[in-house]
Structure formats: structure tokens, C-alpha cells
Image (cartoon, rainbow, N blue to C red; front, side, top):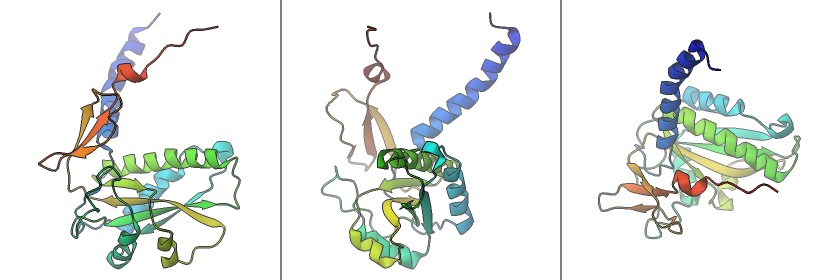
Amino acid sequence: MHTMKESEDALAVKPEAEKFKQLVEKTRSYRRFVQSAMISDETLRQLIDTARLSGSARNGQPWQYMTINSPQLCERIFPHLGWAGYLQDWKGPEPGERPAAYIFCLLHRKRSIVSEKDAFLDLGIATQNLLLAAATRLIMGCRIGAFSPDVKKLFDIPEYLSLELIIALGHPAEQIALDEMHNTEDIQYWRDAQQVHHVPKRSLEDILMTLKTR
């Protein structure tokens, strides 16, 4: 039986739960930024600190992160990145709309790794937490796994570190809309005439299911 105190607690939590859902909704993959709006070293450190607190298989914590916010280095990194595979006629953000910072995610292969699968599950959790933390600061990002191996040549990366993911960050210069998916096979994001970036999402009813018990 629920007590009055429990009901009051539930009502108090509801606004916070709604705020969190809204934060998740706006934490999308942004690809156009206000390039001149710099992101400080301290802000980047705080984002990494949030990622650091994430769960990890057997608590191995095998990921390390390098932050880059030098305009000169950002300019050298940019040509090595792939952008928006579904938008084949778009080669990436123009000058002035490129990322103001990057975070390199490097797998430390000398640390305890249960499996590659577990390590990458850890990375998914950590980077989502990082991007949520960034969104609270009105900074958005894009996880980029499509990059040229040549980007590694810009840095003296030890052999035991493997660059697996690059996160582009900046203050957003585009609008993203979540659309209800009417055709369950049409998963491609797209841009309209006003350059609003549309992302189709499956409905809650489409992804919830019940399996028969044996």
C-alpha cells in the first residue's frame, strides 16, 4: 500500500524526470557549429570527468581521452573526418561551422579488458554521459567513427593506445527535429529546404514487445 509520503515523493520526482527526458531528446548528433565559440580547457576537463564516472565491465576502465581545442589543430584534424553518411551530397560543415573542439577516445590495451564488445559498451555509456553533460552547457556534439587512419599521424600515439572514436564538439548552428517514423524501414535522416535536420524515430509501441513464456 502506498503511503502519502511516497505519493508526494513521486510528484516531486516527476518534473526532474521530464527534464531529463527533454535533455535526452535534445542531445542529438549535431554536425554544424558556431566555430568561433571556443570551448575552454576546463569545460573539456569537466566533460571527461563526467565520462570517467560511468560504469565499466569488471571496472576495467580501459578508455583514455585527449581533448583538443586549438583552432590550428582542429583545422588539421577536420579533413580526416567523415560526415553524415546518409547525406551523400554534403561533404561536411563549411568553414565557420566546423567543430570548436574534439575529444579523442583511445582504448588502453594494457588495461583489463573483458572483451572488445564490453570495452565498446563501456565507451557507449561514457560518451553518452559526456554528451548529456555537454548539452547542459549548451554544447552539442557528434560521435565520429569514420575517420582516415592518417589522423593518427598528427600525434605521437603509443602502440598500446588505439584511437577508436572522435567526438566533435561545439555550440550548435543547426536545428534538429525528431520525427515519428511512419515507414519502419525508412531510417535515414534528412534535411528539408530550410536545412532543418530531421531524424526519424521508431514509436514506443513499435519497440515495446511481450514474449510468450515457456
